[in-house]
Image 1 (cartoon, rainbow, N blue to C red):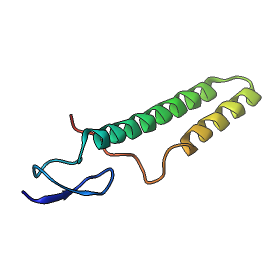
Image 2: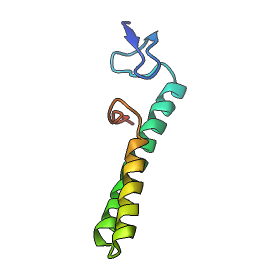
Image 3: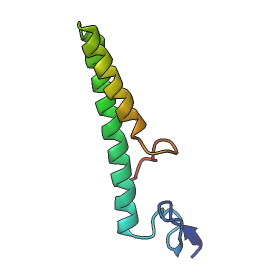
Length: 85
């Protein structure tokens, strides 16, 4: 079997050619990162949508700031890859 590298912890491991993670722990960590990214993105989109229909300019500004804050909390490095099931 070929030596592979875990996509989460970057440690080499032996396994099937299509295996991505060295353990269940690494796979679940990646799933949690993906879920957190999706939740932050979804929340920011919902806040922006509420800001668009807000009639009060102060409320609109507040909602836009909240959306920007949620987007800034996303981890660096772009969107985590989809975890195959």
